[in-house]
Amino acid sequence: MDAKNGMDLSLWSRCFLGHLPTPFHSLKRLSETLNARIWIKRDDLTGFGFGGNKVRKLEFLLGQALEQGADILLTTGGIQSNHARVTAAAAASQGLEARLFLTGEQPPSFNGNLLLSELMGAQFDFIGDADASLLMAAAARTLAARGRTPYVIPLGGSTPLGCLGYVQAGLEWAAQMASEAVAIEHVVVATGSGGTAAGLAVGLALSDVPTPRVHQISVSRKAEELEANFQKLVGGIVDLLRLPVDLEIDCCFYDQYVGGGYTCPTADGLEAIRLLAQTEGIIADTTYTGKSLAGMIDFVRQGKMGRDAPVAFLHTGGAPAIFSKPEVFFRRACCR
Ligand SMILES: Cc1ncc(COP(=O)(O)O)c(C=O)c1O
Image 1 (tube, rainbow, N blue to C red):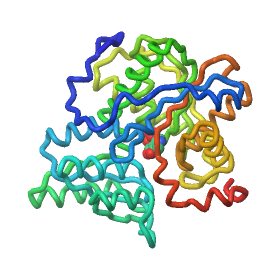
Image 2: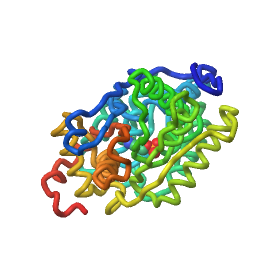
Image 3: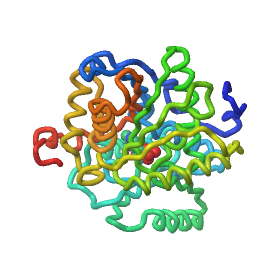
């Protein structure tokens, strides 16, 4: 692998699931509309199990699970969790069971990601506001006592091992930037549990391209919490890969685009989704990418990134969730 530090990700077990590399291209009509130079990395097109960022993390987590002889995957997320959906797909593809501990109450009908997970054979535990890690640990003990081999994947797959998927993505993306001869100065990404941004920042820092600034748009947490999670995960990746600690990482953290909360769409996010859809024919979601897109559009409109600086949006997927609440697109005024 062509990286400054000679680090070799092929040393880790990996279960290849995604359709990689994902495309990287400019957004001509959006750029014209906003008078900016905007590019996109299409991790919504990782393909497997309806795609998105979680596919890359699961390649490494599943690699370890299979190595350990796991026969059931346990994980957690919200009712419309993309991560839970891709975990269900990963389990199905390897002949494993998936048990999903979903925060909240069982909805009257299954749609969006929940429907997809059900179709792929997942089992559900609707856990209200209980602590998912405790419940998963207890379930794993019970399963092991019955002779099963459970593999627990924490929220968002954001362990240092899962983050390797995004270290690899950073290297992949840097090679594309080099071959397109574009020096991206700013990258914008939606951040929840933090593993995507942490792996990406490390991957970009390990590559041979000038390191772009990674702007992390929170979808739920306060900026300080985002930064603390990020530092911890970067530390974990550095330890796992035995990297030098002086990596050139440049990150900013924002929480002003969260709006009313994690699952609550914002008016700016809905406007951003329509703008991307109507200029480029690309679909974002209300929980993650609509909010990060709204952040990027705001930065560009305010001239915060410089008019001529190439900016790139990491599309992390999530579109299946929009089918769970289509009505929010027609009630824009009350969503702030
Ligand atoms: C579509 C989408 N984008 C972004 C994220 C955030 O990724 P991370 O949890 O690694 O910060 C998620 C996480 O669930 C997601 O589903």
